[in-house]
Length: 466
Image 1: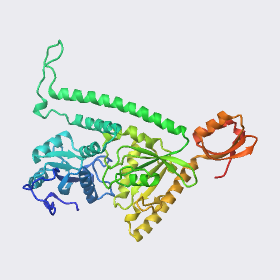
Image 2 (image 1 turned 135 degrees about the horizontal axis):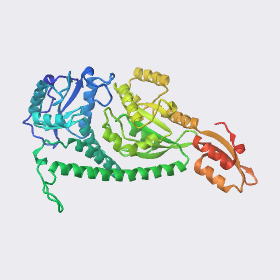
Image 3 (image 1 turned 45 degrees about the vertical axis):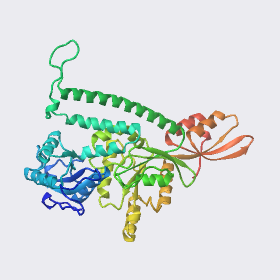
Image 4 (image 1 turned 90 degrees about the horizontal axis):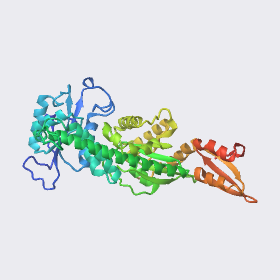
């Protein structure tokens, strides 16, 4: 698939025009990826502009992938250059007319515009094309709505949907301008339909936020209980479809849904991870990131993404076989920054995992391995298992780098101390010294080292080699 002007949009083989019957019930769709002139935009992340590394073709292919993720029947697709965006329609008048011809030719019911649209632009384009129009934000919300499985996930998606819908309630549709009668004992004109809809949306948004706040508190309690089990936390992050869930399943033996589609995972999953030298960690799989991720979704999924904020180690999984991998890396780092994760200040807390080595030819794989070593990354294949032993060793090394290994002799009458150590430290080994005295070799996190010194006495803590 190549970027093209609307005049060059090619009819796909095996797909007919407006006379075709929609036997499978799928929605006939045209996908348009606007490519803005850098000089005409603001140049900021989230404005719909391509980063220098992402080509128009990559942008278009991602937009088509998003449409296919919810099983839309993509009849035509093309990248459309926009020298100067128009406030009323985004596209120029001529381009709007050309695209209208494509929509008519394909008898399309839906047009995906891979760019944020204002409510006015969306309404004007729907009028011009006589078809439903979804912008990038709306499409991602549709995908999330279909993928969410848990109650928490559905609440988060509904909140993002409602915030998005509320911005679309403008005084433009006549059915929303009808006036209703007043309520109670007061006379007066009452509310217009649009005011009622806006009020109902606001009330529902407030209620969902209250429910999500309870979810946040519950998740915090679960996290606190996990912290009492003295295992460090590892979080997988990465661009959507980078292979996070496949890697998660391979490392932990879990059965999280892993498909070659965008946003296969929305609801986070946490499992135990066994490390090579006997230590353990807990690892969480999280929702994939994407360029221009709607701010409403970042806000809605903040409770879920707290797993990332609290993690001792973040694994940034990259699809190294994707030509846009460098651009995707910048997008993920941008979202992490939005979450308050400062990877610059804590470089040891982030480990890049270059996944999908199995898709590279031998020459490209050798080059990728050399580059990974140069950048402190690990090249792996979650499918074939290539590089996973090295990855686990590096994870254990990174985690233990923060934790001190100590030895302490516990007297038989010190049951409370022994219990505290087992609840707050990782016990690597124990040995009987006779007369009821036990020697414990432990790992302790930095934040618990001072507490241990107060409980046991600093003089009793002896450093031990790994």
